[in-house]
Image (tube, rainbow, N blue to C red; front, side):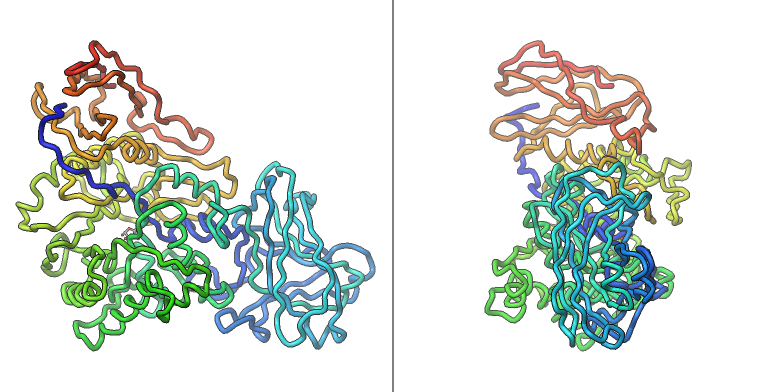
Length: 638
Ligand code: AHR
């Protein structure tokens, strides 16, 4: 490693995080809402509102009602009918929500809220009665903690918003718990109440209102990702143009937001909406890679029945305008229309959008070159400092496309291990050989998603019959070699993000993912690929360092080196099953050599539930023969 050799600035934003709602990663996952079906939005994308996730408590009946809508976007509500016979026994009656496959109950303060309206026909006197909110075991009914909302006279012409806190001091033995909303059976017998937006939040990451599930967010934050790519992935596209992710339907009061049938077979509440994504990046000090809709929607049978905007300015102008408005919401001053809305919704300070991606995987489209050029030029004229990203270049496309100098190409790879190892040098001289002067690369989605096959043929069949379930050590090795190729070419590769990132064990449609989880934080599994990301991001300098190799070419060892003011960093991956002796001579003044390693004798080993720490980064003991200028150290690389 030579300090006086050629050095290049490393790419500061190289390691980031990709998020879209897939695998119930948002609703039921990272989004902090603990209740399922809080607003009766719909279940899968073909079935309308259902009562899933609720059960009666005591002698009551539950049904859905469409005659007492809460808002225009929430027409279906829950009706709780308490029979007149309920007064025969004095008890608590009402309903319970079972959470997203459970509710973790730990010592913390929970925030409960809902809208309630007493049926003015049945309840003739608009009775005043207290309401008890409690966290209970779904098995035994034992109450872990509760709060009484005092009696109040309800609004007679509209819903009343009720909020309360439950201060809980116990830890439930498992997450099979419910939130119960109950009335005294004697007082409330013969009454009917309508409910909607029934919500429960525990503590959120950095305390944001309507924020992120704390433990999962912390897992992400621990990687210190430099950017967040959102909101998709396919999930921005919709199964049709009409059902695409419409940013303006994801902002403002939750009861006014429109739920949406997402691309991954379930309804999205849009509780994790535009503002929450921006606050997420604010909370984790990340740059935004905002994907805007570019006029292409995969059909519900994939690209076979896709919807695509035509190549005309008249058709595309509304799309350009909606993206300009979106950027105004994110970055505009409070004296603009949308900047003013942002302030009204609680965030007067503008956010910063550093990168904008125009569409997602638009190589399936036919006229992306026109749409990209039109949107790029329109956006660039208004926001010249943003870095724009094309989702397609001339690989698997139905067309040829030029990416303008200064813009980026987002490339996606779900491949077997050999693909990544073989492409270690893919970005060496990429700009020169493809004649893409000053075009840079975003590896926006990648992962080892299957084992090697003799033909290296991909099989994208879903559900995952060929997809591996968990990232294996071999996955991390192959991904790591590919990333070393990226680190060695910081003039070309500027951004990268593994995908997908989060998998809910109770409902998923894509494996592998970086993190797998359920309602119980103790069950979370951080994969080997997760740890690879962590190490690669943590140990990286500000300049790349030239390495001279006395033993031939790369393989079975692959490496990249960098340095900053205080440290020289060296990353080494051995792709063989046998140990390789390595001697490193560092032309720099140094005193100590420290190491961290991820290894296991079995290439196919992985972390999984009940064995979550099978492979984790460990301190590495290295032998230094001589410190100081040109000192050396040795290591038998496993
Ligand atoms: O990461 C899963 C999906 O893979 C993304 O939504 C899409 O962009 C890609 O095809």
